[in-house]
Length: 420
Ligand code: EPU
Image 1 (spheres, rainbow, N blue to C red):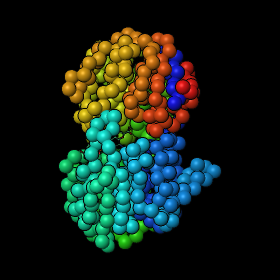
Image 2 (tube, rainbow, N blue to C red; image 1 turned 90 degrees about the horizontal axis):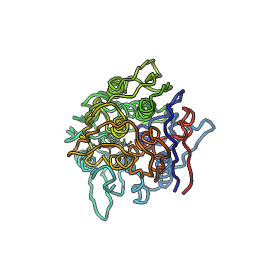
Image 3 (tube, rainbow, N blue to C red; image 1 turned 120 degrees about the vertical axis):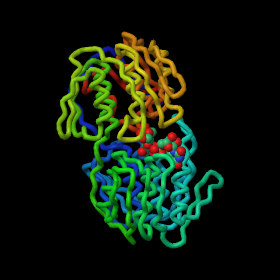
């Protein structure tokens, strides 16, 4: 298992490009199951999770083709099996995203039930109850969700008890081929939901209200192929901006979307960052100053994203003052706190809040990544540490950050990957 070796203490400085968004690309790949025609997907990030989703489509009999520009073409017409096996679902929970499309298009799906994970119990009850309301017959047994429908799914009025991103995506995809109108209330408003809706519209779906809490879908009898480019990754963007702010550096991130990062950018300004913003780029300059601690509370979009919480915890670790960070989306997303304390940070967890008293510097230590965003936060902690940090279990980082050590090296960081 590879590790990352980081020699901290260098201010990041330079320019990087942002990759396509993992959390849009995954549902968009699943959406290719809604048509028998070819869907071309551009700007796919090169990530382990994307490979897993392609592998999942492959084991259903699809043959994704990668062209010379690294665009992927998928043709749902060659499907032979309608199941997502446990071996793949256990490595990537987002495999649940094939449930809605398989059921809506082929009338059957067998998807392993995802278990809990490092950040919380993460049930999929809302995905299941919404599809049942649309007429699906669903039995959960032997660790599998077995779903069938006689004929087409039926449009339905669905109220989501909690705001769920993949739940909204699953139901929205299923509804595109249902008979009649589906209204999803308390829908997730995340930009990735909007990106998926735009791809579905390009495939011939009739959807309105994406980006608001009420999405209306008028079902069609079939969808068609299209070419679609995945939007830039807002979490990757935010992670590099925070890394630059924590190291008192200066950075320009290109090929991104500042308009979907408001909550994060305003916290960076509060931390003392000087920001310049264009249509597709963001420049951040700390003018060599130590960041100021910020307090924040995670919540569904447009509020502060849970996927950026750990990275801000790392920034607070070495900031001036005390910041409190409250996590309201997942019940167990503070595993990085204990690792940062091992590096000399001063933080403690009180319920769903972590109180961080900023220290002037961290000390490198061997640390262990527990999930994707926690790994990113430990890398940031390593970048601001004196001496060497070794981050273990970095397969988590490869799931969601494209070429992270190359991009950080471009910004001047001393970081390298070493085999165990
Ligand atoms: N929830 C339920 N029942 C459900 C569905 C969700 O109780 O049926 C709860 C969850 O347990 C959680 C809350 O609702 O407490 C919100 O979870 P959500 O369903 O929105 O999360 P998700 O769809 O499983 C996506 C992202 C996550 C991101 C969250 C929140 C993808 C593939 N994953 O997960 O991304 O943290 O939304 O924004 O889109 C990551 O990229 O590191 C990551 C974890």
